[in-house]
Image (cartoon, rainbow, N blue to C red):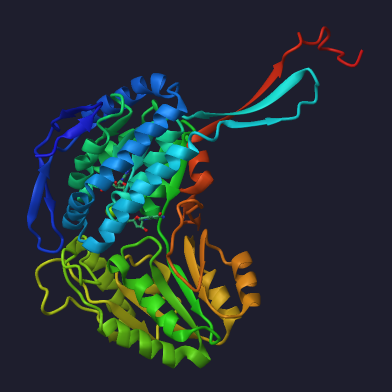
Length: 484
Ligand code: NAP
Ligand code: MG
């Protein structure tokens, strides 16, 4: 059984261990301890005590410890990728990439943390210095979802530590086993700097959010829980960083490379069985290109290999749990009942009754008022819509309450300029969806969140700002009438 990892010592939870499940086989892959409020308190106290010295640890020493995490992850890349695949269902090939990418993120913030402490600005008094000093915030609660348990944790943990904060990690229930296994990569840190606390979101998650000694909540998850956290954090005016849901649109113009656009649509729509916050969930196509693009999308979708993540050939892997699959199927059924066509998919694959698989699904004849066009689906479903022109595609794209990611396929530079300036999304892709670059910011607008991860912005999130006014030459003699 995996125990909780608090303050560099393992503790058993106060309840019976929970079972970790493989979504591809429905088999139990391990057990882990389940924490409650007592463990949550221990974790926060450990993090608070560790903060006193961690905030004063030279940045170069902190950097060396972050690089060491990257080194250990790379040394263990295959084993970690297998564990990630077992608990999330994701493709093993993808998970190897995610481990390497997480290691790169630790390396990146190790160096960025050594290069930034604020700035000096001209003071109105020649005898004074004006110093903009950046300091760590304190204890950070990092609350993460199950879809990318390592990567999304890393995007918080690496910058938070580099900035001098201490962290209590609260993984999703569905991916607690693999997260507790990460303790081995953090053993070289001083006790209390990193703590992994399992337990239910509604209980320990809520407790962390309202705990007076937790100064910041860095959260990735659903918009609903994000809104709840924001309300809860208001009492103590905590720092919040929220990465939430999305309903990302793809616009395909008739002047685009339609073959590339079709491949992009199925990649962006069905990667990780559509369980990506920046999955493509709506496709708007200019009417001249509609039937050609739709035919290619349907053909490509039918050829996708559905199977377990441990098979390197699998392209569409299982969903996380039957409940999530049902939610997706409900949206498809409701759309179909109100007139949408299911061109392919829309069911559990007949040859894969074990495991939580769902066939990649393409819908046509959808209307904007259907749930599948309004709410996040978080599953392998692509509604493809014909629009008169680029202007209509833009206004439909921006009509969503979400604003996480958005993609445009075109060869017209004027459309690209207009698009990048007016599309309401934090992550904008032109002719290549979902690519990432950890040296630049990632995040959402509107109900998709507040704040940015990665890049310089991702470090700033974990820093508090002070403006220091320092009189060096002895000060004024008369503050009431300084001009005399
Ligand atoms: P979720 O239900 O919101 O859960 C996310 C995390 O919050 C889990 O660790 C959960 O713990 C915890 N939690 C639940 N209730 C809580 C509460 N009252 N107080 C504090 N913490 C609480 O999301 P999910 O179902 O795991 O993940 C899917 C969602 O994440 C989707 O909406 C997706 O779009 C979003 N997401 C966004 C991004 C992004 O970068 N914008 C990236 C990935 C995913 P339990 O597991 O124990 O409930
Ligand atoms: Mg949930």
